[in-house]
Length: 378
Ligand SMILES: *Cc1c(COP(=O)(O)O)cnc(C)c1O
Image (tube, rainbow, N blue to C red; front, side):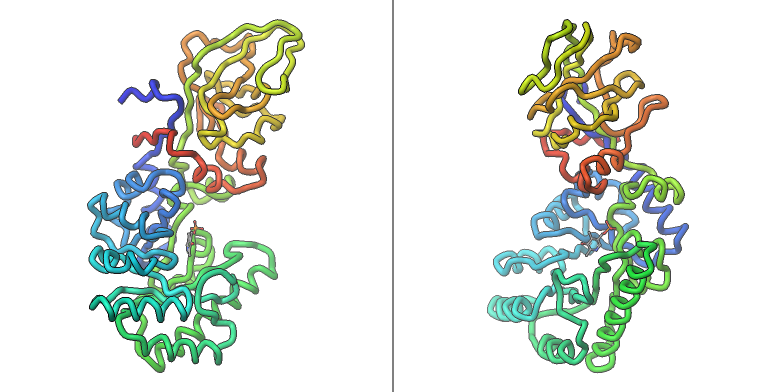
């Protein structure tokens, strides 16, 4: 497909994702690897992720049953963990497709167990522990309460509990109080696992590290680590550069026209931009309907790369289009495509730069690129 024909597209480098995987695995001596590709692979596309990772990943993790099925539809036979509950009505299919489910609470575990017994199935589960994040999972802060819940849990038939995991709230933070909290979470997690191993039996898979914890805290590795954003080369720019990860995604859009306007002419909704002089305006077919944050029209920095030069957005960003200033010195004659995220010559706009302006994170930016932006695997 000639993707210059599409309004806007994102290139996703399969090699970058694969290289990031190997770099992390080898450089940081990681144990089993669970590739976290929820939210459509953080916006990169589940197919691209499976293409890049299937040969080497040990596990996948996603957020729901539909995403897990998408991985199976890519012909992958690797184990998949849903980092949440699977609705009862999907659990038969999940069991047939060897999709593992998270036990997020005792009431859910009971309901799932009853459903499995009624339907004569067994389902593989990982027990999620809440060690202080206060999101999903069995509460493990108070070990005595936890013991009661766990005793009840392990008596339930139909559930095959093969893993136990938790999630850190502040992994990788250099702030002393955060590091102490991460250590506390790990201590609670260890105490909970010890109780299970002493009273019930060995746990096959213990895992608690996300990307940042896997790199910064080797003492927490255990059996497996769950790597998400680092696979895509996303994270704080200096940190990503330091460890040598490569951003996998570039976002491009078509320059559909260039118009000359006069002093006093306006551009876009609410006439938010009024020209002070005669100038050239580039019309770009990408807007907030494609996931480009509308608030970026207020950014004072030039954000759109046209022929290797960063240019200013003019006026408000529309749903399907945005307009940019094309300075006289830019040769725009043969420009078909501009860059919203990525590199062109010596100019670069990183995902983080955009994230910082909108007060978010890099993965928020990539995962909000909408489905009408064609993902091109390169
Ligand atoms: C999203 C997620 C991860 C991956 O985190 P990254 O910081 O992107 O590596 C790991 N574990 C759980 C439970 C998650 O929800």
